[in-house]
Structures are given as C-alpha cells and as structure tokens.
Length: 346
Ligand code: NDP
Ligand code: ZN
Image (cartoon, rainbow, N blue to C red; front, side, top):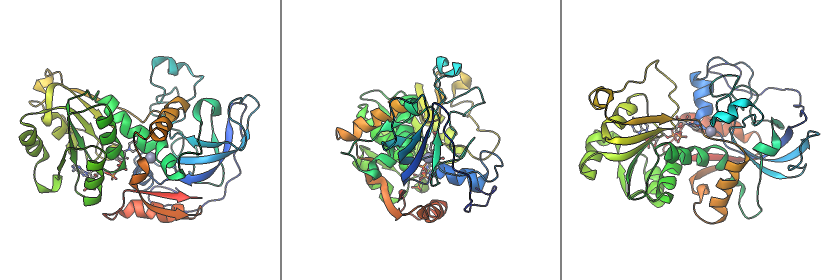
C-alpha cells in the first residue's frame, strides 16, 4: 500500500527478530476483502508504504533467543491476529484489543508490515505460530489465519445453539465459514443470504438449509416468512451499514447478533428503535475481530485434520509466485461472480 487508493511493490530491509519473535518466509498467501477495504477505501485511515496482507502459511527462517517451541524450518500457520501474550490486556479476555489501541492485536497490514513480502516478522512466535501438519494442504492451511477463525467467531459471537435458527448475512468466504460453524454447533435451520450462485451452492454444502437472495426482495420479509417468525441468531458477514438494521428486525427478542463484518464507510451504523424494542427487547449485538494466537490455529487445524470441514473448497483461484499477490489483489478488488477466495502459492 503506497497510500490510500494506490498499491504497488516496494523494497524494504529484511525484518529483524526480537528475543521472542520469528522471521518467516511465505509458502502460501491469501489476499482478503479487508486488504481491499484498507488500500482502496482507506478504512483504517491513511497509511503510506505499508506492506499489505495478513493471511499466510510459511516456513520459519529465524527465531529469537527466547523462542523454544518454534524452530527454523518449521512450516507454520500464521494467524492474522498476533496478540502480545505478555501484555496485561490479555487478562481482560480480549487479546485482539491492546494497549496500543483498539484492534491492535491485528498487527499485519494494520500497525506493522504485513505478509505479502519475501520475509515477514511475527511477534511472540511460540504463542502465535501453529505447526502445520503434513496431512493438510497449503490451500486448506491458508484459509485458517482469517477466513475460518473469523467465520467461526461469528457463530461464537452469535452464540449459536443446537436446534436454533440462524441467518448468516453474507456468504463470501467469511460467511461461508460462519455457515459451516453454525452447522457444527448443531443449528437446526440456517438461512444463507447472498446472490452469487457459486457461493450459494457452497453454502448449501457447508450446511445451510435455505438460501435467501437479497437482490430479490427484502431479506427480513423473506426470512421471517420462511422461518414463520424471527430467527434466534444472526451472523453479519457482508453488506453495508443497512444490514445491521435488517439483522435487528429479523432477530427474536432475546436473540443475539454476531457481527464480523468490516463496516468501512459511514460514521453511524443505525439501529432501528422499534425493532430493538425501544432498547428493551434483549436483542444483543456483539461484534469482534477474529481471534488469533497459536491455540486457536491448532483448533482450526484439528477441525480440518479430522474431516469436520474442508475450507479449501472456497479456493476458486490459485496463482504461483509472490507476484501472484498483485493478480490476486486485483481479482479481489473487481470480484467477478465466480471468485470466492484466491490463494497464492509462493
Ligand atoms: P465478500 O465480499 O466475499 O462477501 C460479502 C457477502 O455479502 C457476499 O455474499 C455478498 O453477496 C453479501 N452481500 C453484499 N451486500 C449485501 C447486502 N446488501 N445484503 C446482504 N448480503 C450482502 O467478503 P468476505 O467474505 O471476504 O468478508 C466479509 C466481511 O468480513 C468483509 O467486510 C471483510 O472485510 C470482513 N472481515 C472481517 C474480519 C474480522 O476479523 N471481523 C476478518 C476478515 C474479514 P453476493 O456477492 O453473493 O451478492
Ligand atoms: Zn483477511
């Protein structure tokens, strides 16, 4: 990211590892919708000469003197969120939010250089890097740092219960993983809201029971009609600030909304007063950054190793070599209908 609106290549010095850190070279990288929000929409404010990218699988080339578990040569899944596990904020239970300010557990391509580079720096390597088993593919592993962990967090935030009805608004890769997570948590009925046929098809494969097209009428009406009433949980994984109003309207009193969408525009996200029971309907709205860290990645790995979910079904495009990042980013920017997620095999 040269500045808001401009992406390009830049030469920088190779990063240096502190005592707890690692230097990693990428094996697989994935451009993300969030990279597009950051560079082309300025969603995180102006940034100049910042390396983009936060989704990577890599090989460790160097570790600091205090790193014990991770060794040079290890193949690792690198979470998009790499908290400082020795900071006091960890004790508040929200490791993604840090002393340096809100959202600063998200370091790559936010407060330091990201992973679209020949080498990148990982803080607190033993606590953030998960070893990648040989039994999974690079494509599967590349879906874990953000898409899987974020989609699954949507189901956690919405507190999806077995037998419950769930609406997942947005079925790009993040929403698709929220569908899969809701199915794994035992939801009874899952409404997948999107329009692109390829995403709809995959949502059904991941466990959705109904597909709802937001281009073909009001989704609140469509979902309430199909469900014969409001739903127990809503996961917001796409759309603009108006989707929050729809989420509140389609939610049962006592229900919970889990937002994982990145609202990149508008100062205000409106909440409809009456549908929110004038503030008294016990309709809970939660929102969070994808959790990172090694333990979380090891659980993502366990889901794939044990055949619970195959996130590589979302990979629609594969590019070779670091230069493939440029093509992948352009693809995400233009997002033709057949794209779900590109992966760059470095
Ligand atoms: P995509 O752009 O691939 O998917 C967005 C989805 O939302 C599509 O299914 C799209 O439908 C649907 N959609 C668009 N407009 C509407 C609307 N008005 N009503 C209902 N549905 C709509 O995005 P990703 O899956 O890659 O990411 C989703 C969001 O999550 C992004 O904002 C991203 O920045 C954010 N994100 C958040 C993270 C976090 O930690 N909280 C981490 C990573 C990403 P279709 O295209 O089929 O028409
Ligand atoms: Zn991402």
